[in-house]
Amino acid sequence: MEDLRDAKETVSEFAALIDNLRPGADTSHRRLERPDVLVAMRQNSTGSQKSAKSSISSRWRPKTLKKDWDETTEGILWNELERSQNEVAHWYKLDQTVLKEFISSPNMMDLGCEFARHYYGDPVKEKAYWAAEDLFFDLQAVKQGDVPSARWAKAKVYKKDWDLADHLVRFVLLAEQYRLCSGQEKWIAWQWDFAGKISFYLSVLRCYTVREAKQRELANNAARSSLTLSPLPAQNNKGWKVERSPRTHHLENKH
Image (cartoon, rainbow, N blue to C red; front, side, top):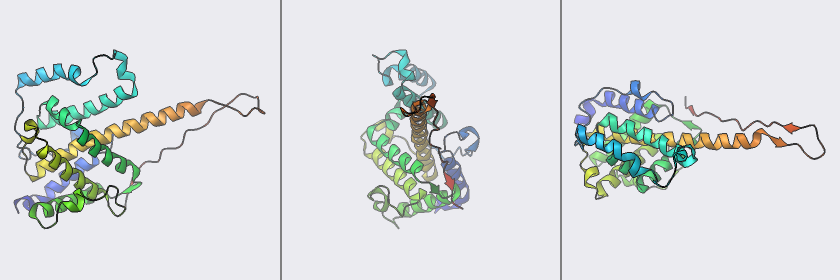
């Protein structure tokens, strides 16, 4: 019941983090100051942080590729993911390399990309605060044993009657399950209270939504480039026809 005492403050924090899932959100000003939320085991000293930074490039980027790899689609997407990962590592004071191993692991990538596809594929979603309330109370119900986690964790992906909160609950539950069952001691050592754990996973989730946004942007740019100049039909020799790319519709909140 201790979690419920700060429910209003916690839900507000979740709402800010859910808003931050949108690319372009100003993460530096939307988070609430909660020094008591994260009780993570510190994975590094100042010295180990410096050594981790120097080893990241060699460990995570293919050694055989040239500098122009950064300009490829793969390189751009990787750098986008890396920037988001570094923000999370800095905010929670975690070892960057260890966190990257977690976020970039195949299971987490699949889970995160699964959410991101739903997030951008759903034309309408409820307001962040409503989703935050549902997320809070649904996970409280799971914690108290009132509702089985299987309701979300074992459900089929993309259930038609699910809203944003349901997909958030699924991500948090499966990410936590994967972390604790991974056998990776450095991941398992991270410890949070109820609010801190969910805040962490919402921050991690943003890495995937930002990456997905960049991937869609690159795809749209490529489509636009291919349609910019296209030859007119043979019977018309007046020149080149300029075509507009498909208009991108922005997501809107439910009212």
